[in-house]
Length: 222
Image (cartoon, rainbow, N blue to C red; front, top):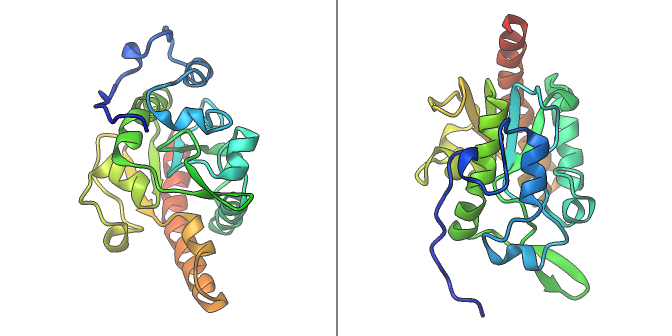
């Protein structure tokens, strides 16, 4: 078992080895593919960096890639991603216009028979990946930032932030002009029955519709 060690969070692209100006998403993605800041790279198939247009003014941040994302090398392509697609369509947000990423860039899993089951990332692993997330934000300079789930929200907005209490509302932050947190679509998939899933989906879409109205306004201004 590998010993724990402190990981210094790098909060600007200038401090990432091998990345030169301009700090483009393409350069950052290439550098992240070689990341060894925590042990997750040893079991992951590949680094799953963010995906979307380099000109995106809207970023959605989730927790970590799942099994499908680990194999494909792109975020939100599995069941949760498909549900997110549906929610974005209902809310009036064009997925191809937004940049999708995760707080952690490698799939953390544990075996269950022949399956690889998602395991929640640790604080250390989130901290080790924070430089990449900071660099994505620094490169894109989003106007709107949406955190999907508690891991993303607490990573970016503080450990005391509670999505259950503040979901769907704009939160003051230096990260972007408009910052919001809502549930992660995987939470809907884990709901115990169809009725719960329906209600959770309805609330999720409602949160995204609030974001959509602001997105429409700020993108017209720009």
